[in-house]
Every structure is written in structure tokens, then in C-alpha cells.
Amino acid sequence: MREALRIRPTNWLILLGVLALLVVLVTPFIGMQTITPASLFSAEPSDMDAKIFWRLRAPRTLTAFLVGAALSLSGLTFQAMFCNPLATPFTLGIAGGAALGAALYIRVGVVFALLGISGQTLSAFAGAGLAILLVHGLSRMRRDFSMAAILLAGVAISFFCSSFILFVQYLSGFTHLFQITRWLMGELAVTGFAAVRELAPLVLVGSAVILGMGKELNLLTTGEELAISRGLNLRRTRNVLFLTTSLMIGGLVARCGPIGFVGMMAPHICRLLVGADHRVLIPATFLFGGCFLTLCDTLARVLIAPAEIPVGVITALLGGPFFVWLLISDGAGHTGFYRSNAT
Image 1 (tube, rainbow, N blue to C red):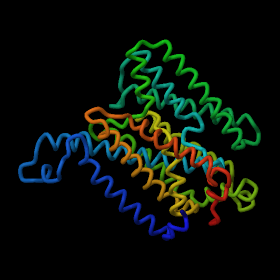
Image 2 (cartoon, helix red, strand yellow):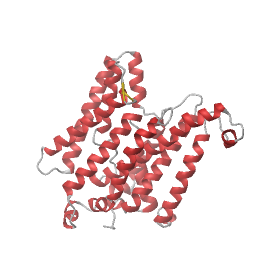
Image 3 (spheres, one colour):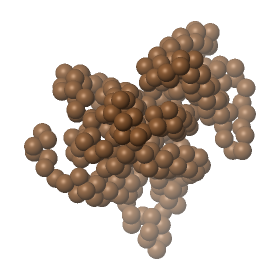
Image 4 (tube, rainbow, N blue to C red):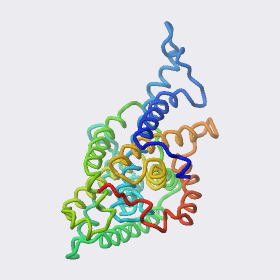
């Protein structure tokens, strides 16, 4: 496959940029009711079409693009940090903490909002923040502060949160149980641009930090000893990447719920296109991940219209076969698949 895709990485970036622009501009017009540009920009635009487009579809498209881009970058970062092609944005239990916070909020039933942000989002973000602190604190208990320690701490927190969520679901009535289950499937249904305003600063700042550390990510994939010999400050680099990525994941999951497999699939597909140099791979993954989740959400909206499929179900249906392919391919067995020589 790689032999058939002999296009320069910079040209792939241009193609992905054009694809991202087309996806963002075209998908808002697609839905149960197709909207044409003429109905929006004619001398006498349709009020109903304008409301659907500007209050529902355009914000949802931008939200899907931001979430997909951030999840993909987070997966790419964790795969480089752990030197593990199966690492995902949810490896360290951040999504579990957010899910537990949201589940507790739904079960308690106390409705509140702060600064226009719903109590469910705030509770989920608080749960994600607590998970970040616990993972970081547990891993610091070991003197070496190794990636294995962080991974084990994350897995432990993830299992704890999953178990507690099951307990909360068992104690919940039918209504609360449905709400919790529906949120855990992940959704991108938004009204207005409030979600875009909430997520855009988090995603853009986090992405800029990761983009600025492309060389450090290249060094991390070569192994600890070689990275140290090249002058990399492992502790500082890991702390910055861990906190940046975790906060970004926490904010995304708090707003949209856990949407799986995006952060695993997009980085691997982009490696096939542009190679393993993170200085090129990071912007490619950002663009491809945004396009991928936007298209998945569009499919979720129209597949069984007028009903909607949770977008997390669509990504899981696509991610399952991809995961099997990854397990049986060279990508899961050989570190050279994601190791960069541009160090």
C-alpha cells in the first residue's frame, strides 16, 4: 500500500487541507432535509433553512471537526509517548473519570449551570481533572517516573471508574439509566455556537503545544536511552505532553462524551500517507481526524433519519475491524512503523 501512495508528505498536507475545507463547507448542507446554498443566500432566503443551517448543522460540523482533530492528536501523542501503536486518548483513564463525573451528576439529579456551561459538562470535566491528578500522583510515587508507571496508574483508574459507573447504573432508575447509557455512547448534538466557543480555545492551544513538540515526539519514539543521549529532558517533555493532552481530552469528553477509536485509527492512516516524522504527521493527523469524525457524524445523522445514531456507535463499528487489522499487521508488531528517523 505504501508503494502505491508515493506522494510527497507536503503534497499530502495540501490535499488534506483541501479535503478539510470541502468537508466543513459541504457537510452542513447534508441531512434529513437537504439544504441548498440558494435557499440560504438568495434574495429571499428560507427562514427555516437558515435556522437549521446556522443553529444546528454549522455548529455541529465545527464541533465534530474540532473533537475529531483533538482526539486524533491525543492518540498520536500517546502512541509516541508509550511507543505503543495501540495507545488511545482514553488509555490513561481520563475518559473514565469524565464519564464517572457525568454519571454521578445524572444520578443525583441536581440541575445547575455556571457561566453558561451545563452542570453535566462541569461535573464531567471535574471527574477528568481528578483522574489526571490521581494518575499523575500515583505515577510520581515511583522514583523513576517511567511510562510504565503512568500506564499502570491510568489502567487502574480506568478500571475503578468503569466499576463505579456500573454501580451507579445499577442504582439508577430507567430514566437516569437511559441518560447515562446514551451519554456514554458519545454525541455531537449541539445548538448554537456555544460548544464551538468552549472547545476551540482548548483544542487550538493544545494542538499548538503538541505541534511545537514535534521534534521531541520524534525522539521519544526512538527509546528513552537514545532520546536522553540526544539531550531530551524526558521528565519535562512527558509532563508537558501528559498534562496538555489530558486536559484536552477531559474537556472534549466532558462536552461530547467518550467517542472511541478515532484517536487510534487516524494516526495510523496518516502514517501510511505522510510517514512517521511528527513534524509533518501532527498537522496531517489534525486535518484527517477532523474530517473523519465530521463524516462519521454526517453518516450518523442520515443513516436512519429522522432518528440519529450516536456517533460513538459509528466510530466503534469502523474501529472494530480496523483494530483487528492493526493486530494482525506489521503496525502492531514492529515499532519501525511509527518510529521517525527525522530526529
